[in-house]
Length: 232
Image (cartoon, rainbow, N blue to C red; front, side):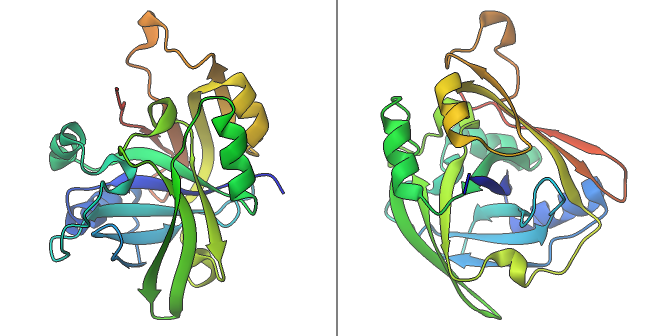
């Protein structure tokens, strides 16, 4: 089974800010979510599944002010000062995560292309329906490969979050990933995702081009989100 887009990640300064942004942007508020003890973060989520992106959700994630420091770099670049500054004004699309049942194999194959999505970490969070468990790639330095365009990889153990999320009028229609090397894009074969692959470099006249763009259908009409450009 090829990888599928599992969820898109919206970084927020707080969950309250993120929920208000969702309501203003989409006309829909997230419903589920919980705490991540491993990372000192918490989230709110909502189903954005569509025909091209089945079993997909949107995650609003923020540093949990009530959690102790995790003793390591948090996922999705949440500790980076430039992102912290950016999301004080507004939440930002920062990343996409792809699910697979062959996570070790994909990590090894990407490493052969000098791409390192991260170490495999085991994480979990409590829900009203039981404990969600998964493995996910997270780099120790907090970086995201290909400026954030290369998805992190996740492997769920047990139920998927969408199994208990209520349906919403919000759905992911299109996702563009830019700057993924051709061999990696071919290896991942993410269905219904338009890769704009290069050799991994960004040409000078495209420095400001977003590494990923998501288009969603919403009660407020089509919404296009450009990802935050992560440099370095």
